[in-house]
Length: 286
Image 1 (cartoon, helix red, strand yellow):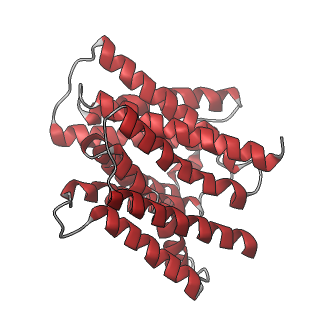
Image 2 (cartoon, helix red, strand yellow):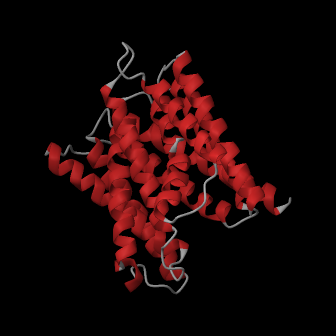
């Protein structure tokens, strides 16, 4: 197995893990508040990645985590986590996942505006076309428009800000240490949601199993993503991120009885096509 193939397999496995995590969160949120689900998942992830960091001889929370860059990253990730968790719980999982696929387009836009990276006319047109795909899914001003879909849009911008801040993250931080920080942020996001809703429900065997499933698939998805991004060429491996949309739609239909309409499918296809072309351009440039 070549490095590119191995990295691609890990990326597909990661996206499957994240899609299953979303499905477990959505199901668990029917039994206990979504803030409680997210908080418990975050605590589980902190324990796992802290153990991995200690096993590797690293401090789970090094000083670099308190740097200004990591604080900015955490703020954006909190926004992304909160609004995406709410989106998954309140709107069709296929719609939430489709909107999230526009994140790479926002990252390219942010890299041009913040870091001064060169973006040609063709790439600008692809970014704008990708946003048209998002509007097709949202259908603003039409009967099919759902205001709750805006939750996924806000989450998309939150995750894009996190990814942009990650570019300036200290290289001394290990994957396990970044995992500890990521899941601390996840737990904190859940606490913020709980502070707003003010509701905590005692766990039953069923809800505990659902939270455990979400945590397991979330941790495995994160670990597989880390391996994928360090194996093979980024330009080859990264486009397989879009398989998450396929997994989400399959789960939406099979588990939740969702039926993505033509607008969602067309908008998703436009977003994915624009993202893949931009990534392919970046690879050729590199």
